[in-house]
Length: 168
Image (tube, rainbow, N blue to C red; front, side):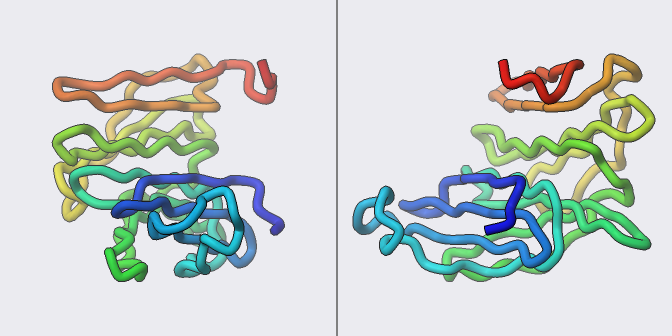
């Protein structure tokens, strides 16, 4: 596959993997068979031409956030249903992020954090995926790339690498 970005998340009793690219796709493992064998995975829903897929799973279900670039770039979220089909796309922000981190807390609340071309980090939040807050700036400067986030019962954590590309 031509994918540069991949994301793996729990889906029911199995897993869902999303791949970026010109024809972004996904594969699903239902929990039956050996996940290390390619024949245990089946083709999942296609996302189209998207970048930076980031999937999460938890109490609110399995969701994927991605960036659709082009004349009007935007970041979208979609829920992966138990049938293996994607729900309707919801635009959460009209921005073209450099990096994207999606996380889901133990209560099902979600947050998307991204670094923009203006050297600031922004966040949108949702309790269940239906409605999202307006983007808020977390901080400016510090080159927010290679972002990683985690949500807990009373807050969350975020780390980033100001020197992206180092594999250390």
